[in-house]
Amino acid sequence: MNSDTREAVGAPFSAAAMEHARVKTWEAVENIAAAIKPGMFESEANAQGKAILQQMGMDRIWHPVLIRFGENTLRTFKERSQSDPALGENDIFFVDLGVVWDRHEGDAGATFVTGDDVEMQACADASKLVYDEVAAHWRSTGCSGAALYEYAATRAQAHGWRLNVDIKGHRVSDFPHAIYKAGDLGSLDTAPSAGLWILEIQIAHPTRAFGAFYEDLLV
Image 1: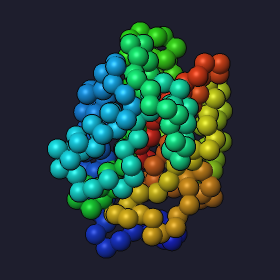
Image 2: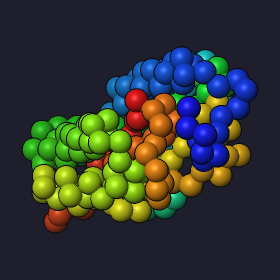
Image 3: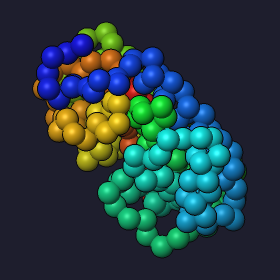
């Protein structure tokens, strides 16, 4: 384990428990996405997401359930959605969850589409593609967190999308990670250790009003 205080963990910390939290959070993302249907309002989807997490036996959420529809997929975590849109028959949405399972933080997010809009599907696919490329770059080079986001911007552009540079990833650990004051991944001047950092990728269509989001634990 890196001795940097930005990668500090508590006494309950377990790499196996972190992986369990990751698996459970991805299961929740898929369950929530499957329950979202055209005609549903964004606020309804967020409420339903919380109910599904309760049914799955989470300890608690550590950041609010965040589900965005349509143009709101361009907005960052800290920005409020505009209005309360209903999901269309040909539309795009993402699910972003921060959930505690067995005292460890899971954080996962992915983008989904309804209907057959080719560009929306391509955008959703590209968010995961860029994530995969950046994660592979981290594994092969051991570069800093800051360098990872420089690489992410070049890969997004190469695929025809714009990277939202305000989204830069963050720490996770045994709950709560916030006590460690680690800063964001995009500002980390050292190589991030496995199992402690969330790589977030948010991209935007170059001309149309939608984007896509994907995040997962770097392992």
